[in-house]
Length: 465
Image 1 (cartoon, one colour):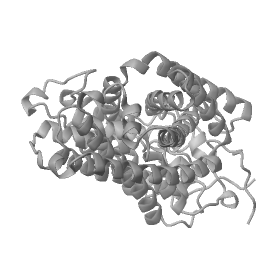
Image 2: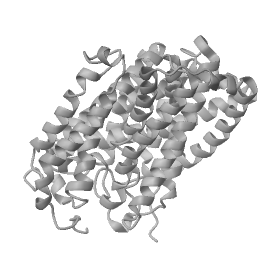
Image 3: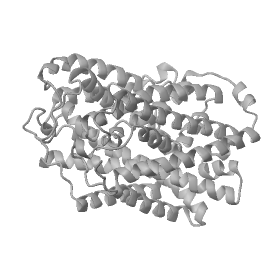
Image 4: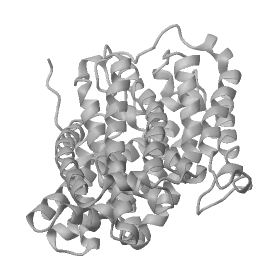
């Protein structure tokens, strides 16, 4: 077996068979570690902070994990087959230039998630080292730059370590909650409301679906013979189990804390575990857990920006110097947002993750329907870099369905940023993401089904160098 370098040398280009490596279990540990972290805890806590009870919040979150996790895992299964980052494959549905439209929005998503994660990590590092939260944010940003530059293999190694640390920390915190609170009493306090229940579903579904634009980036090095079903279950179960465990902890923590939770999320979670040396270890576990997902966000951001630029200049080669500049720009922008917004974190974060669904559910719908039902994995990979090739500059049917998928959700959205006119008629229930998943899926299949005849007979790989 050919040894693979620790520092990744490829970026958005195709991974040839000779460079494929790894085992499918690494997908499970990566996504488990990426989800056993403080931002997921806070996301689960929102279900209670915003009015839900413990019992129905837990059920709603689990339902959302399963729906969103299925979408996420279907994207993951594309990686070994195509050997490509997720978003560059969107050129099949949107055109070589047109794919820049959803990718620009994906870049904003990465920026937001990196910034919000950096806020919480800054709190943990500040407490651990006895420095200000702002200095903690800057220290964390430096770590993320180094990990992102190292790339694929280092990211997977961090994921394995984070999954072990996360399991230990979470088991300990759950045991402390069992000692400090009457779980049976919390679960018995049930007052079902559709609005609160569907908010919990939406929080978890949006969390999982937001991984869709980059999950294949971390499975694309697996050997092409890797089972798509095994990849689906490894990535999906790792993400669903990790996120649900985190969100369950968040639900119980918020129910116990009451008004003490908002604004002191990290300190309250660590306070459940104790003080002194135990608290220091928990702060370290929280900060290290955020390294995984923040590196994924920064790495995905780099891949996305590189893909946008490469589409217009007709090349997929990115030099190491360009990679450094991209990563510094991405992490720098996220750090600036984190420093400016650290004191209004919780409210802004809830609005941000829910509004994300508006833009990424229809993208997932178009991409998955095309891959699994229209082209059926038969991509012309060299044509993805050619604006004059098979996929053209702009694929207007794909762009049109995506745009309609965004617009059709507007009357049903309920966030601080915007509330649609249908929300009041539905009793305050936000069903926009469900509409944004179903309608574009059906419409794209109806419009694009004739395109199946134009797909190549089988996957066309680039010529070997």
